[in-house]
Image 1 (cartoon, rainbow, N blue to C red):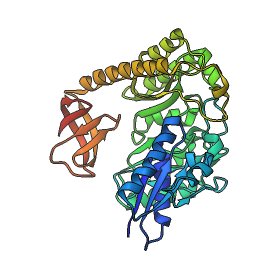
Image 2: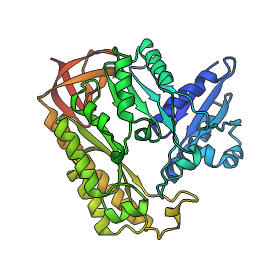
Image 3: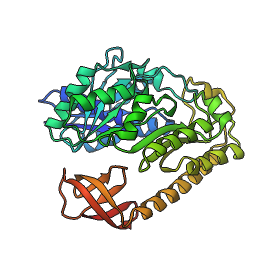
Amino acid sequence: MSVEAITLGCRLNFAESEAMKALAPANEEWVIVNSCAVTAEAVRQSRQAIRRARRERPNAKILAAGCAVQLEPDRFRAMPEVDRVQLKDFSKPTVSAGFQGHVRSFVSVQTGCDHRCTFCSIWQARGPSRSMPFEAIRDAVEAELDKGAKEIVLTGVDITSFEGGLGRLCERLLTAVPRLDRLRLSSLDSIEIDEALFELIAGEPRLMPHFHLSLQSGDDMILKRMKRRHSRADAVRMVERIKSVRPNATIGADLIAGFPTETEAMAANSLKLLDDCDIIAAHVFPFSPRPETPAARMPQVDRTRIKARAARLREAASARRSAWLDRLVGTTQPVLIENRAKGHSDAFAPVVIAGSKRGDAGQARITTRDGDLLTAVWA
């Protein structure tokens, strides 16, 4: 019998999917659909994944879990394809590790959120911020390294709110696990990056130099209406500070297009943020109102306009990314191969090296670019 996990949404979901797979009965065939609720489209895709799983695995039992299920359990129970709905008690968080046995593994260190961004319903699904005990995190990292992981990604809903500070957690982890050669961080709330983390960014080569920031908008009025805690200038200064202490650092960002009341001028400010923050990896989300959130009650932007603004952001972000990849041709970069000769540089450029195998690592000379992939040879 087999257990398959279909995971939507964030890296934390991937870690939690692995934990659910480990708990499934060994003598039964299950498909776990771990849903996402970050947008209305994510919820639609979650329901679509359930229907597709039933068509493709007619004899398997289907378990629906995740944020969309937490928010609307009755809606998912009513789906004829679903055999079981799994609700999680987030008051008792446990450390989860995703992609077990893979070169890169995600380890959850925190869940929930204490902030109330007006567009977000995830805090309703996961509750307040809760941090995992350091000992449990350390043991999970050790276990993943024992299984062959070469890189650990710390993940959660709001990892910069980790109790005691994310920087201190990273310091303790790198000290306690000296064989941890590559530590990467998932999405960061830039306003919460602490001084201890800045010291690591500046001087710790085992901390990978790609930082994905939850920026959401480049316009101050929209940021206020989102109830974000940073200004546009704060975001720009944060990136400037990161790059001043780690010149090879690269920046990714989450951006929302078409937030309620957004004008063309406000949208242009977000577009300009791509340049001002040197963003080379943008996750662009067209705004969609989530149930029972303040943003759902604000004056909405026309859907056609939202899609056009999202497309414009993506096009500009893609052009910036292409230019960045082009600049890497001819350089030498540290690379870790993850699967089928494909991997990433420390700064998270996608690289393929013919003849390489999973787990290979070292310096590689970038020779050409093919779309979003760089081709390289070992230096």
